[in-house]
Length: 102
Image 1 (tube, rainbow, N blue to C red):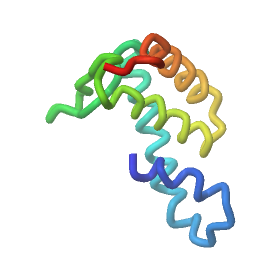
Image 2: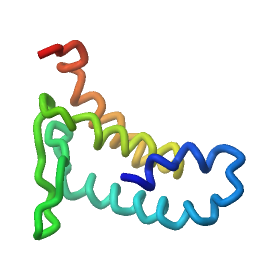
Image 3: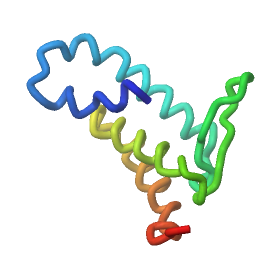
Image 4: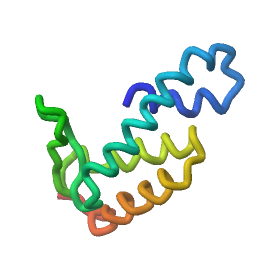
């Protein structure tokens, strides 16, 4: 996810984007694999178990927005429509908690 936080840097005048681009492409591929692995937008990946299977949480978990946010960053970087579709699906899954204050 660290590489994904650099996505916006690639869209600016950053002179060392060649250093960031390979890990970003790797992160994009891993996110696409995660989308295929989890499939259900009401299950939000929160950590990987030792066997590399995602542990998922629900929409009320404090980390629930991390995965959709990473999908949006990956889409911003790659312009891959499948990532945009996934980002929309996982973001829409959070709609019931948009005003949650508990």
